[in-house]
Length: 183
Length: 183
DNA sequence: ATTTCATGAGACAATTATGTCTCGTTTGAT
DNA sequence: ATCAAACGAGACATAATTGTCTCATGAAAT
Image: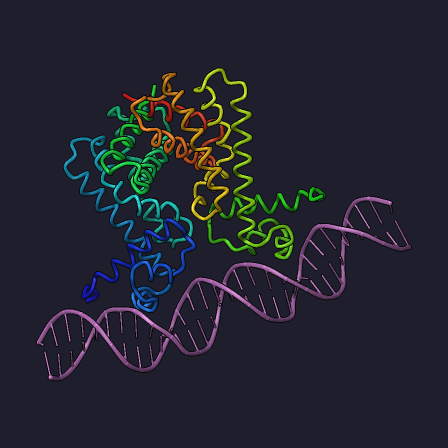
C-alpha cells in the first residue's frame, strides 16, 4: 500500500502547487525544502520533475472533477449547477489555475480528458443560456474564458488577503452573471 | 548609438515576450533561436537572463503607460478614459500579463513604479464610480482585479484565434462594465 | 577594393538542477 | 526491547543552462 504515510506526500504536493503557481521555475530543492522534507525524499515519492507535474495535473483534474460532481449533484437546474460548481472550485483556485498554465506540456491522455471536460462544460453552458443565465448571443468560448478568469480573480483576492473566501466568491459570481447576462 | 540595428534587438524582445509568456522556463537558447539569432548575439544585447527580463519589464511598463496616456488624452470623462485605456492595452496583452506574472522577482525601483501606477488607477476608479461606471459598493481592488483579468481573457481569445481583436475587445469591455455596474 | 561591424558558430568554464546512492538516525509498531 | 520502514544529510555523477571568448564570414559603407 502506498497510503502508509500520506502526510509527506501531501506536504510535497501542496508545496509544489504553491511554489509552482508562484514561480514555474521553482527547483525541486525549493519544493522539498518548502515541504519541510529532504530533497532525496521527493525523489522517493516522485520520478523527477516530470513525474511530479504529472501527479499534480492528475490530482488537479480529479479534485476539480470531484468538486464539480458533488456540487451539481442536487442542483435543480443547469444554472444552479454552474453556480455551485463555480463556488466549489474557487477554494481550489490553486489547482484550477495550475491546469490552465500547464495545458501545453502534458501528455495526450490528459489533453483528451481536458478536451472532453471542456465539451461537457460547453453543453451545460448551452442549457444555462436557455434558462436565461447567460446572454445566448455570447459565444460559449467567451463565457468559459470569463468563467475561468473570474475563478482566478477570486483566488487572487483570497491569496493576497484582499478578501475572505466568502467575499471573493460572492463578488466573482455576481460579476460573472451580471457581466454575461448582458443586453 | 544603440539604434544602429533595432531589428535584432526587437526580434529578441519579441521572441522573449512570446516564449516567456508561454513557458517561463524557456531557455535563452530557445529565445535566441526563436528570434532567428545566434545565442552569443543575445548576450551581446542583454546582460544575461536577468538583464533581459529587466528590459522586458521596463518596455512593458513604458508601452502600456504610453498607450494609456495616449488613450486618455482626449477623453471627456474618467469613464471614457478607462474604456480607451482598456481597449488600447488589449493588443499589448502580451506585455500586460508578463508584468502581472513577473511582479514578484523584480527590483525595488520597478516595484515602486508599479505601486504608483496602481494608486493612480485606484483614483481614476473612484471618479468612475461617481460617474456611474462602477457600482460604488464594490472594492477598488476587485474592480482592478477584474479589469486586469478581462484584459487577459480578451488576449487569450485573440491568441488562440477564437476571436478577432475587435470581437474580443468588445466582448471584454461589455462584460466588464455589465459585471461591475452591479446591483 | 577596402574597411568596418554585426553576426554565427563553436569551444570553454562555471553554475545550477537533477537523479542516484549510501549511511546513520528517528519513529512507530510489535 | 526489537525491528522495519521512512527519513535527512550528504556524497557523487550527469545533464542543462548560462556566460565568456575567439575566429571566420558576410554585408554595408566608404
